[in-house]
Amino acid sequence: MNLFKLSGRIREIQVHLIFLSKPEFKKTDFASFITFLKEQESKATRNFLLAIKDFNDKELKSTEKEIRKICLDIPAKKLSRKSEKFTRKKAKKIQCLHTEDPSIENVHKIRKHLKAMSTVSGLIFTIDPNEKLELIIKGLDKTEVMIGKWHDNIVLNKTIDLYLKNRKESQEDNLITLIKLRQSLIDDNDNLLKQLMPDVSNIIQLILPSPEIDKTGLQDIQDL
Image 1 (tube, helix red, strand yellow):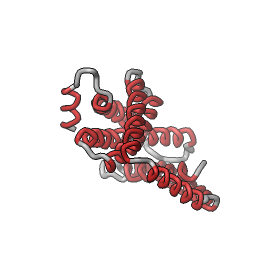
Image 2 (tube, one colour):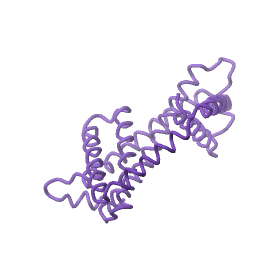
Image 3 (tube, helix red, strand yellow):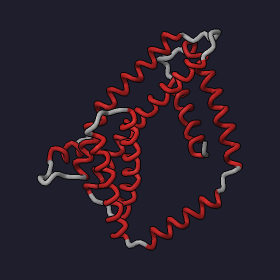
């Protein structure tokens, strides 16, 4: 497992622990599960520290310099055109995924495309700011928050499954409460997708407008 995956895993576990520290949860109901999470965090942290020893930051800095040089050598208008072409390509991929069943795999793919679009759109805006792009970025920011929460719920459910699979009979967690939590995360994700997909559709309509300008789609973005 590479350095970035390990740091991501540590972040995920910390998010789970923060989530379970909410006042509505009784720590006694999740005592063993919280201990399990902390053990997983310690393990991931140890592996992360070992991975750092083999990490060559000189190569990373060298790559960053090359990227900066390439960007500086490309005229601003050309960079803007290339970036817009990239964004449209990603939007078309999301459009195809959007027409299919919202499976976990497809939503993960949509999430990756949205993150890429958000990063590149932010870059374009620094070069060529305009109202339409500002609306797109605003919409992308909103969808990133929702799909990020969706992803955190998916990961927490997988962690609960892992815990239940490896749980010792002597552990005294309230399994009914843990299973109820698991179901509530599933229900929460169903609601998130119902909110998310229309917003994603509005962003796609703005990036890939139909032959006739979809004023409704534009207004929906403006109202986000």
